[in-house]
Length: 169
Image 1 (cartoon, rainbow, N blue to C red):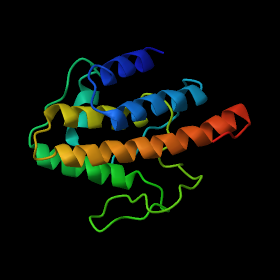
Image 2: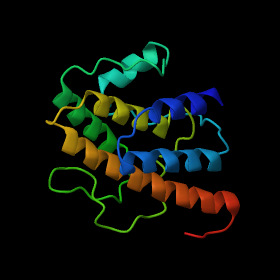
Image 3: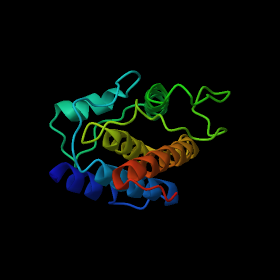
Image 4: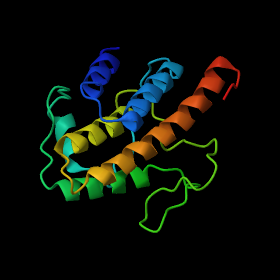
């Protein structure tokens, strides 16, 4: 579908490190397991950066980045959104962010939204943050990219097992 091609092309324009590259790769694996279909609903919007809504309302022009404004506020709202999207079993660290200090479980329902309104939106929002990032939030962005890659890799491995009816993890 066009949204996959356009989204992948936009996400892959620049090399923002191994974690972001892994997230993109696992995202394509996950969408393939979903058979490139779009689900009936998208991700939740609680805490979502307003720039995401603005971009959607302006017609999903992949070649255009929405206005970020205050970079630190954007980073804060991105984390609030990402945290709200996590399954209940994911514990939070001292800063209130999702922790990887436990084994991943099989329930990713809050994030299992195939299609253009799913994890593609998280990846695009993360990309826009990186494009606007200064040293003030670059380390924070790297942490976010690492967590997104971790989550999508676990989701993709699980969905691939279901789709292929085998589990080779």
